[in-house]
Image 1 (tube, helix red, strand yellow):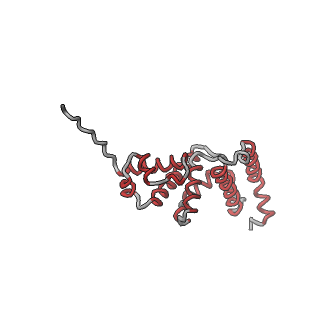
Image 2 (tube, one colour):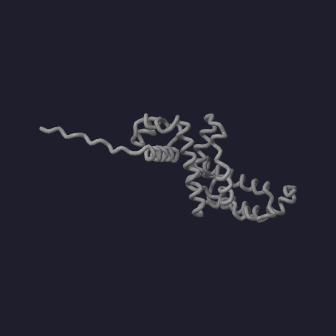
Image 3 (cartoon, rainbow, N blue to C red):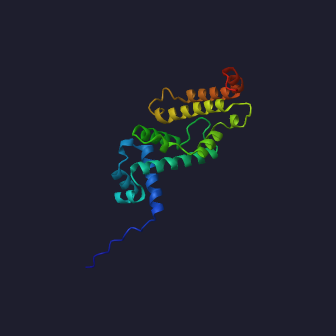
Length: 196
């Protein structure tokens, strides 16, 4: 009787393994408690050996930061496709959860900051009506952008377990309020002394 040879899994490149591992981390952030982001869980879900993770990434923080950068990229794609309008685009939820968790876990804020170009593009795509108005001060633009980002972060982090606060009606109220603020911002800026 001949014993069948076991087939070896086809080898994948380091780049393919990297992509798969990051995708698994993002999937776990979306669906599982963050405490389950362990090497064992990640490697099992990715179908890799735990050693593979540390051949590709310096440590778990390095892996999680790579996931943050990938989520930033996905958010930019979503915004460029016209999604959003003060409702959380899909990648914003895991992004916010992961960034807040990393910050509270001791990751330096400088490592979590996206580069200036990403922030500028994100701002331009989030508040395009204001971005192109020369009579609106940078201070006013930053204030509206921060307000919009704080709202999105609130939806992403507490919306799921505070449905009585983040109702569809409340979300629409916020969209209407911010839209009104945006139309009135030149006058409000002058009243607040932000134009000088």
